[in-house]
Length: 265
Ligand SMILES: NC(=O)c1ccc[n+]([C@@H]2O[C@H](COP(=O)([O-])OP(=O)(O)OC[C@H]3O[C@@H](n4cnc5c(N)ncnc54)[C@H](O)[C@@H]3O)[C@@H](O)[C@H]2O)c1
Image 1 (cartoon, rainbow, N blue to C red):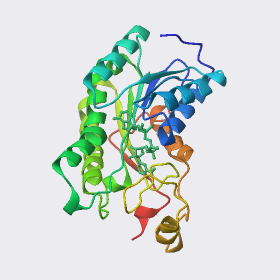
Image 2: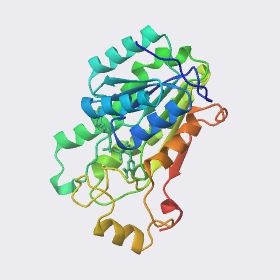
Image 3: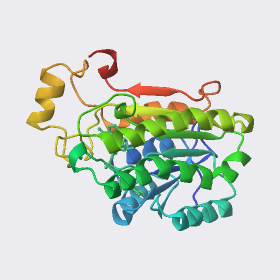
């Protein structure tokens, strides 16, 4: 693996994998970790934007590499693992890749439900287990799963997505217990509403958050106490805490980064 020297920073010398890093929250997490000194392998199924993000980071003098990975494909995970074996190191895995689904229950097919589970829940599981041998060799092993506020709350027309994200939340706790003897800390971030292409809209399509629907329901009517969506870097900031040495005695925890949504009703 071609690699330039990591810049100084709290994560200097560490190697991180971030899934879904071609855009949105994943790109912001990869950027934060790289700016903190980590060598970052950006993984996504969408190759061109992925390479654009990685080369932008390299342009800043950071150590970033792109690897095309579909997290539902065992062979892709094996290829990523083989690449990391050559680097002989993995310290941090951020399971961020996911797809949005807003199918009403009467329209939900078995195929769509299983597709959403395959990416949003099972993808995080098999990525973690596929890279576990490498993580176990690290003295700083960290896994951070990006779930959702919809993993801890029910929302209309979100059965498949909510089931998968709820699975990620409790997978985090169970993995934390299983991996504690290896010194690997496993935690979870549940974003609320983030200003990315994956916005929760009634038809399940991806849009920017600045729509009438979003403004009316979540801002005008006060469903977000902070009255705005999060920016991706605000999710990355919380994620980066779980990845670093300031997090040493926290594992199995679920942090809601939601502007106060879950504090009210
Ligand atoms: N945006 C929000 O409001 C919001 C809220 C709560 C939780 N989240 C969660 O945050 C994470 C990131 O969301 P985002 O808003 O940045 O989404 P996004 O749609 O902007 O980016 C998701 C990325 O994941 C990649 N991806 C999807 N399926 C993949 C697969 N099978 N293999 C590899 N890569 C795949 C996509 O190509 C894309 O680059 C997701 O887990 C999402 O569920 C987002």
